[in-house]
Length: 354
Ligand code: MRU
Figure 1: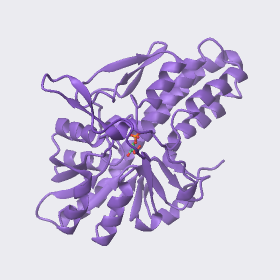
Figure 2: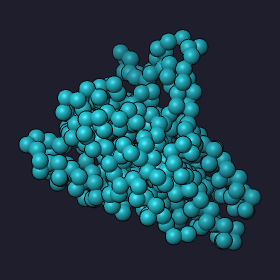
Figure 3: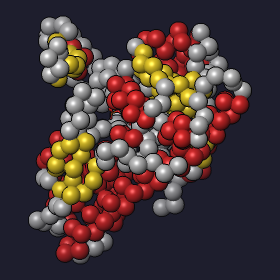
């Protein structure tokens, strides 16, 4: 399937990039131009761009933007350090920065700026191809389930791992879009994903694409599985360790536990750029703490249709906000990558040649 993003999540425009600002979605759809290193770093940190593959590609463009006046070794190291410090869990950020450093370091200073743009654009194109391949391999799982059912295949997902988290069709949603394009009936359970409600972004995407879906509260996932309403769970990932343990948006682990208890297959869909071959297991994955405001507030529309942040409790309420959790490999049926679907224990075989 050739998937075209309805609005590009990230594209070059002259000496800067234009992003789809995800902090306003699904309430308002606005783009934003970034043309300084600081604005790119802030966009990643503040989640104007989010989702592991998109974070990586944005950081790559950030390197190009950061080298516009000075492309010495010292500047390159400084630019990479600024971008690397924006978000800790999604390893695609570090993967993209390492790839930029490997490409640029051997070059003369004068060639680096243009080469950085070229490499960032290559990363973006490859991500779109990777999403298509994940869709291609993942759809077979849905076709198998469709063959055993009369009704639609009921897919549960968490957070947003659709087109707005990538440069292509998405990761977890790529097989869904592929099935929909082939005329296979699918129905998606979309969990809201507190505290930031990225599930609302998934709902927005699926609504636009005409894919049948239902928004659920995060806590409804378990009962739907016990009632036999879920055929498969597919989520994305932010970092997959060598042994297959997978970090994804907080709440993923609870879905995997409920899936195992109910005999529902649980898959992670992620590009190989999300696999951290240097990370032995989930215990070594850094988990981002995003502070308390996301927990004690919610964003929505008021009666005048204005985007409004509401405080749920006093601002000094004690909170905890781990943004990700780790699903152990033993709960994961398989990992859908651009190279095929693998049992979590077999990832080591995919380590790229050094
Ligand atoms: O904090 P976010 O919104 O960047 O977290 C995103 C997720 O956890 C996604 O599920 C993951 O990055 C996969 S995106 C294709």
